[in-house]
Every structure is written in structure tokens, then in C-alpha cells.
Length: 235
Image 1: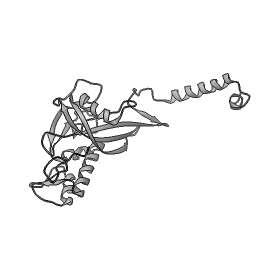
Image 2: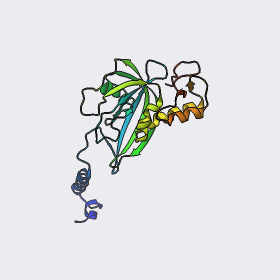
Image 3: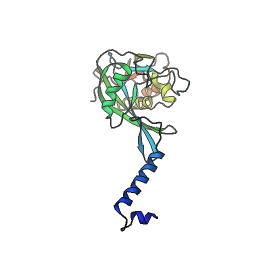
Image 4: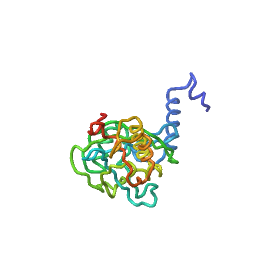
């Protein structure tokens, strides 16, 4: 029996259904068996992992929440300070996932704000696509680690006022840190932010982000502080 026998005009409906069943079973056999529902989206034969990270505003103008990953020898970002993040579940909206990041990783309720940007990177057996969102805590106080051991939990958290705290994570390939630093540099370059401790040029601001630790007396850029001294709200 040939393909023509199964698909041609003279083919019986039963034979056509049989062909569809065979093709469907073949693709199912090729699909990775180790992936969990909600972790991945398949595009052709390429695997795409979609995630969101949250830039949580602190209680003081210009501050934001950072978390430290555990010292896992198999993690390329082990021990570095970064932003809370989660992987999207199947069909989950990014803003819904941003709220879930607060619950699952920090034990707080978040109100997501502006989308700061998106980036992607080849991670070998999959492509990571990640977006950063601003967020504000509307209920609760951060506590780490949370109880869910099925996902990466953090070992420390704190508020920072210096974007350079994310420089090491960005250098190691952290997309959420790279997006955050790029967004801050753009705002400083466009005049949306100001330098703490006096006036300064956009070049001063962007050079500061490239440093892992600022030089003594170097002015810090706080892109969330407007010319009036109030936090910028771009929702």
C-alpha cells in the first residue's frame, strides 16, 4: 500500500484516518518526554521557555528588590544577586505570571506595572525568552525561601539603590539583569532619570552601570526619580 492509496481520491475515509493516526503517533514519539506541562512551548522542533522577572519598587525612591540565588554548583548564576523570576505556565499571561512571581518566590501580592523590555538567549537545548516588568508590593512582606521546592527559591533578599548590584548577573548571562541595566541606561541617556548627589551627564550615568562597584564619590543614577524628586510611574 502506498501514500497515494491512503490519500488519493479513491481512498476510503477509514484509510485516511489511519494515516492521520500514524502521523500523530510519530510526532508524539519525537516529543521530549521529560518536560512538564507549563514549562515549555514547542515551535516546530525548537523548544522555547518563556519567563518573566519583576523589578519590585522599594519603600524609598529609587530602590528596588534584589534576591540572591542559592550556591548550586550546577547553576551558572549560583550565588549572584538578581531579580525574582518565574517560568510561564501553558497559556499564562505575562502580567499574571508577574503576580505569581510575588506569591511563589517572595510570599507577597504584587501589582504589575510597565513592561520594561524583552530579550532572548540560546540555552543549548532550548531558547529562553524573558520579559521584565515593574511591580509594587500591595500586601505582605518578602520572605525567602518560600516553601515550594519544585522551583528555584532564593536565599536572601534586600532593597538596593544601585543598579550595579546586577552587573555580575548580567555578565554571567542573566537576561533579566541585562534588560534592567539597559532600560536604566536608556532612561539616564534620555534625561528621564537624574544623578543622585548633583547634576551629571548621561555618559556618567551609563558608565556607572557598567561598573561592578562605583568609584568613591561617584554619583548614582536613579532612573525612577523624576526631576521633581518623586518616583516615575510609567504604568
